[in-house]
Image (cartoon, rainbow, N blue to C red; front, side, top):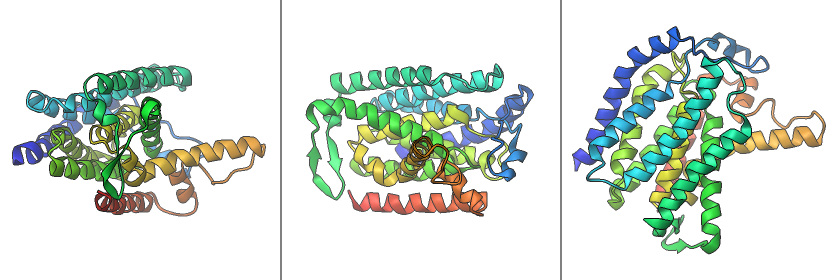
Length: 318
């Protein structure tokens, strides 16, 4: 049993930890540094030039570890596809922004089109190979499954793309997205092991990869994951949730992702409606708390603890 959950954590952690001293100097030499917003917290100005695209470390760790288990655990393939697919989209966006020095990266319609294509292929897999995974477990009613019928396919696109972009918005402070997603992936690992779902090697691999990455990503971070990492993690969370028939549970365990993306949507909508007024001092909401006087480490700690408690609620809801 330990081979399926202890070893993936250890293998992925070691790979991620070893990649840090190799990748970070290389990224620094390439001058793929982060550029912070001038209107953001002044404490972030010192982050200018910190290497980004560190999500490559996470992706490589997860992919390499998963390859050891692919033959015996074929159900990890669709999750790995979604993780890698969105990671590649993030990599292209990062590469355009920080290597080619085009600050906008991919255009919004280009990024959305690519996300729709990747999600569409995932939907095709579910329909052809695993249609039962379109059924959803209902929190606190474990014996019942929700069947959305013809709305099941549109729901996949909403859940996947929404989760991916929520995770992307959460990546704004040192260690924030990493810490929150460690909690979420640990939750999914516990569920996967407890239900003998056959996907535990990849959920545990993500836990290990993020632990290794956090060695370099905690405050003060020496590397950021960039869109390469945040989009990949969003794909992982959404893909895992569907393979466990638990997309509704993302609302509970991934509440931070949801709050982050909603804060941006509310801010932009209110700004346009009122011609310049704001609900929050800055969005995503983690910056609002910073501008209210919270330290960066306090925001990360509170968001991570909140996620850990919500994961316990998620386990109760099983």
